[in-house]
Length: 319
Length: 128
Image (cartoon, rainbow over all chains, first blue to last red; front, top):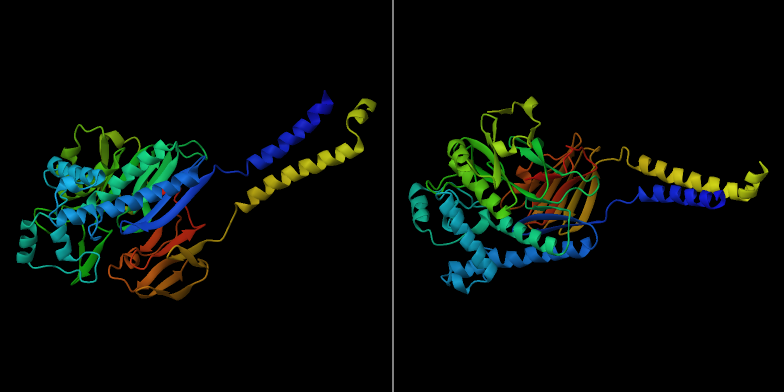
């Protein structure tokens, strides 16, 4: 009996040593798409193929949703072609964007193409336009710019694709638009998602432990230009045509629905704290975290147990 | 004692000891490898790693990018894109990086600056 046992124990010792050396199989892809940088990390069997499929899906959607590619669905729409002539995904994206505009009372608006072009955000000719120019751009609300929903929309499609391929764990960042799928296979814990400190991008202001949720932040620190010592960010108020100035530094939305999270983060930033919080009332399908310019942090009730504020030593406090 | 000698001959005992030692060495090696690795700033251009700069060494490095040049700066254990020829300057505006997961990205130049083995905020992923 002992004769057989000893070799078995030794084999066990070796396996234990080797087993602890092996992390869960994963595949990480980083690439440029949709005018930003994407990082996809997929775990488990078949992760290489799944990650590659996810990347291809993003490229496919980029071709549909781009406002600059001449052949994209959106460009064709902007040249006057009918919505019905677009691909199914193109139609779906536009229809959802219009529905969100309705829901948010216009705070999220997918037809700000002319306004965004006028301000020249992300170009080397960004400038503060004259009032008449802004008024004119606002009156021409026919051309679509799906920048405020595109990444979220792509995220949802990618998640659907990955699930269909049997993926159980993944974490994705589509230009900062995050989705965490399943739990961290290394320890079985939920994924820990950090939120940037709006005033010090090197630090986090807090985190949430999440599974199967998307997290999207709109902030005044992300994209901006400076003119005469003043900073102009990229989240425009569709009513005024100016960068939204409602006393918020950032709005973060947590939801299983990434395109909704994407639209709402923009919309609620434009709405401001009071109107934004009112919009969240009674909604269980998403939660929100507002950070004001006075470093006050407001969290919807459905997230209070999950959000951990870590930046109290830097003056952030619950409002 | 005789019975034991029957089961475990000297040669067997040697092999057994060697296996246990090897198992122990593997575990010790893994533990050791995980400790105290140096932090790096990784510069990627068009999906190829251009260079890895140690965060421990202050320096400024000028690199050629499609739209002209860009300057990578390491100072005080942090890295940043100090300057870049690009229309939107988002990469420069991102500022200093020192933690894992932090990136400065220049889309027009397909340039990425990120931290490897840096400090940790204890998070798995950062919303940007």
